[in-house]
Amino acid sequence: MTNQMAHSTQATNLADILERVLDKGIVIAGDISIKIADVELLNIKIRLLVASVDKAMEMGINWWETDPFLTTRAQELEKENLRLEQRLDKLEKKIST
Image (cartoon, rainbow, N blue to C red):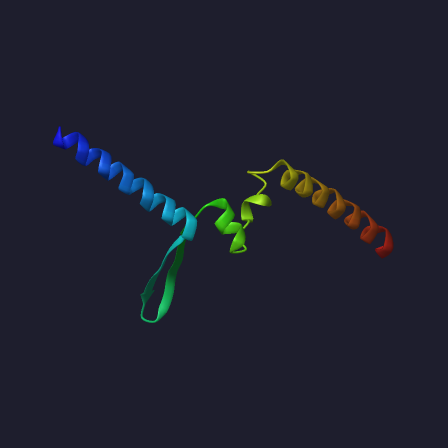
């Protein structure tokens, strides 16, 4: 009986912690650099943000709205951009001849 009570309390605490993290947001950042004789061979920047969508948008983070893999509107914009680039290329060729 005591194991069930402890488990229930732990689940509630975990849910509270998760709710707080999503509400406030948490950032984990780190950099990895590999250098030999002052020559940088590799530089990796790692950034992790855990937050609710509302909190992220409040912080000005909304990259998923324009990611072509996540939104159909971004895919449409990507196709339109390609068509405009092709038209521009044709116009530039006409002007240069």
